[in-house]
Length: 348
Image (spheres, rainbow, N blue to C red):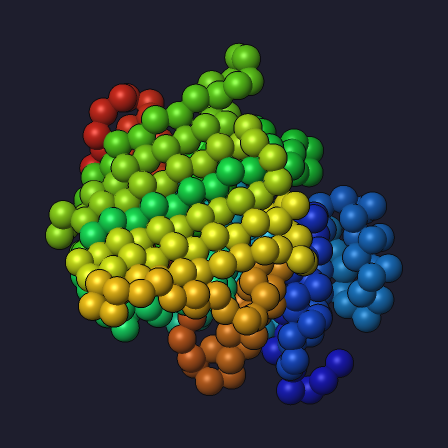
């Protein structure tokens, strides 16, 4: 192992934990120093793939290691506060998968621990690093469409994977399904409409095709308002096929339309496109980026940015405050689904 490498300890070695470890390994100047996995079988798999890494079933043993710089938390959502706070109090920087937690109280505890211990806290909203979705943001910031007024983020996909021990289908462990994937789209909408101020209220609807499990919301739509009068629509169905995401943003002087499609969310060979229109130019431009995009590629970018931040005290793509905002929007949306009324979004 390199003396100058940023050393990661990965807590959680399921399907996505494996992807995290692969991304760290693919990142120059980063190393998987240790892995904490739930079962002995998973530990055996980790030892086989990473023979030089320390592997344990006790994450506390991992975060106690002086050699580790960053703890990468890839466990079910209900465990995020427990692991993240312990790692921050042990003096480690933390890269925390979304959602950062399943309650605002837990989010606050994690943010407070990062501040109290002077550690970096990055939350896994990796779409912000995409050559496609970030290009939308860049165009908005350049003023290409004037003042943004409306944003639509839509996903049509096949059903969720169950996760280890079926945790993703256990609402007590997942919090709610809005926190599971729509949280990415709430984050994008807030990011794209940043000039419109903070999100204020949300009205949402959802239903399930799973008899006896109304809490497992296969179809979900929300309308979210911002301080300036701009608004966003976030909508998702899990009752479809493949993985197809669209983002549209309209402003006072133009519009942007981006799309991404693949056989699944982690496909390595997606199709994607971005078109933009400005009223003054009166021309539709094809601004599709050359660089391939998808969550596997953005995960690698996330690791590279984390390494740079650790070495140079640099910027993070999504900090703890961003993660908390995302949870706040999703909790308000779930409240609206449950009550059938408009819900207030709690400010950070």
